[in-house]
Image 1 (cartoon, rainbow over the protein chains, first blue to last red):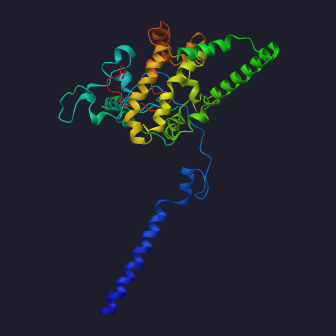
Image 2: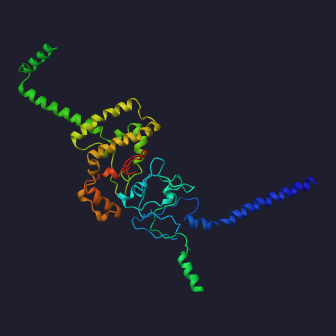
Length: 159
Length: 195
């Protein structure tokens, strides 16, 4: 009886180990790795040329109403830490008069209980968590996003 | 005391007994050249970046912060060293700044900012001194390279051109008013105008 148990255990272990290895191998085939990395794993490829940030200062259309607006200018060296938030030197409520930049929306002044605060809410303090500058780059992966207006129009055509 | 001064005065007034007029004039001239040359060489030596970052206070804090900014590394390889921005280029102003800097020697000897924490605690005060200096001289050290008369607004971004052609052109604002923290990290900016 005891030996039978041992044998079953051994079989189970062998099977599971084998399964793990095979599943690993199956999930990321080697040639796919190479297409993402553009080079064999044991080499250090030359990184692609740095892309230029779009510095047009022209507001971009949002793809959906809740989308955090993208930054239409360079933000090189902008310091955002506990001491200072460089973005706010133009986009804060009191600064937009001088800077003529859009004020951050009022939601940034609200805490999670929807109380309005005098200053930026700590949970909305780190701008680049949601807002990012844009590159003039080709998309790495095809984007299948469809604007809601297009969806509505398509529905209307169907009926 | 007065007697002593009188004696010195008499010695100075008397014509030289042992040395010829030619020796005294030429010798004085040569000694003057050597003294002046030596003085300026020493002054120049203290105006080198290597001298500035000879102190670990400067090398480990502000110099490291400068390294990632456009004033240190950029596409064309023109860079600003410490004295380009922090020491006036004009001779009299330079001497005045060097005399002020004697306080920095005091700070070095007594370790006023010899740890990162001490430096961070003093950062606002140190930054304010530099802002005040640049505000008072209309950002002269910036303008030694960035000459307003030769700025081409059409080559600037819309935002930059707007600001430079209005506030800066009218003299209402100077470089440092908007470009604080251009080469080093900013301190806590609570209460600073424009932040």
